[in-house]
Length: 223
Image (cartoon, rainbow, N blue to C red; front, side, top):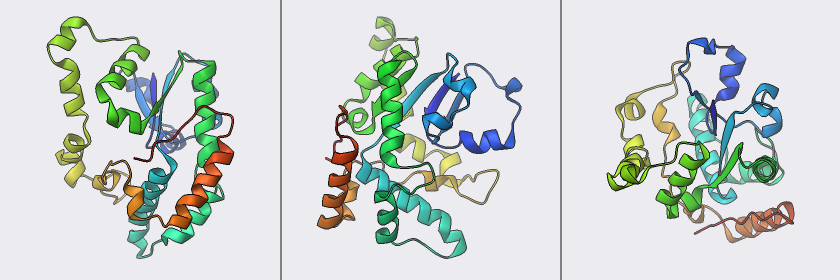
């Protein structure tokens, strides 16, 4: 089983679905912190792929998504209100820094189980990191596959542009609620935070991140 960081393993576990009919390997996705994962996942040979994004773009993405959810109730959160909570570590899945550092430490201690990827690095060198992912999952590309363009085709099919334009994502809705799938796609760009942050907000978060990640080798790109 392969576990990706994103979307909603939590709700699936709450509903207690029957996984026996699922094909293998099984791909699940979640926002859960490592410590909140079931022991069966932590202690098994399950491979975990953690995708980390810089905190400023993470916050802007979260703010837009939260407001899309609240639009159903005709109310939204101001950016100042949600930013204050973010800086205090108040969010559904705990402080951003705790979440990132926990998975990063796991990737250092057990690199065969946890692969830690940076969103900005993938955007900059997608082919390199796709090959890293394939090797981590123990199914590396052959020379023949690379020469035949398999890697390039996978990148095309999994690109933001292609996925966001699929019929299921332009017109589909979640089966459990009236939420449209297209709310999960916005821009996918690096540096969009610059269109929203004030100088004071940027400096405040820089200070917090410097303190929280002191001693780690994690460096964020804000290009």
